[in-house]
Image 1 (tube, rainbow, N blue to C red):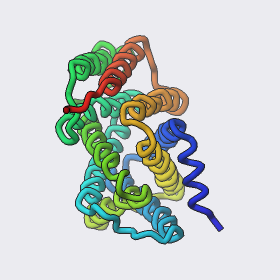
Image 2 (image 1 turned 60 degrees about the vertical axis):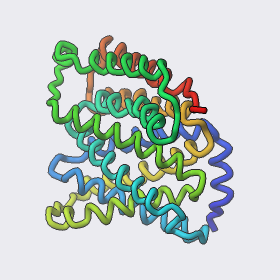
Image 3 (image 1 turned 90 degrees about the horizontal axis):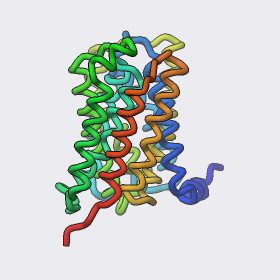
Length: 296
């Protein structure tokens, strides 16, 4: 029989490597999303992803014999709503932008985390954070410069960019709620509310606009669900056991993984401007999360 306690102990012992694995699995999830034909609506992909994740999570919760509804229900529901919003935005940007560029924009979220930490959990917004914002946005400007994009034969509309940034903001807010919940809730209860809220909110839309996947598309959809479940498990464990600053920097590995997958599977071009912009965003990420000072 599966021993969940032993598995959790092994995950906890991985420390920062939890977030390395999380970045890898989330990158594989983005690959699966990109591989699915555009005829399948984004909200249906999120729905299927949530269904697979919820089945797996309920199975684990049942084995652990814990209360599936948790303690702080309003915050758990908020985490689910934020996660659902973030996932819809992220899936949209993945489908409508090069994988490497959508991943870089998504990973501006640690900078937003620093801002929201100052607003919601009483952490001081320092000059480092302000400078990090400037450097991070400079990096994004270098990547999204029209001349740079024309050099790699890419056209990106403003709506896709805006939705990608909205996904990053929702991701940052979700991270803040996960960090707060990790002190009072079992990690699988936190994970459970994400797909549960997604299923409830998206079910009416999916039923009205149903598109039946082919067998090939179904394989990629299953991949989305499995890789996201692995990513969420490693992520939630990592956030519970590491400071937010260290976690944010390690998670940036997904940019590396995403760029490599984009080159290998979709023939995306990466030039010096993209590398320079990515390094600036990474520098902003590190600066925004390395010297957070609590208010006294």
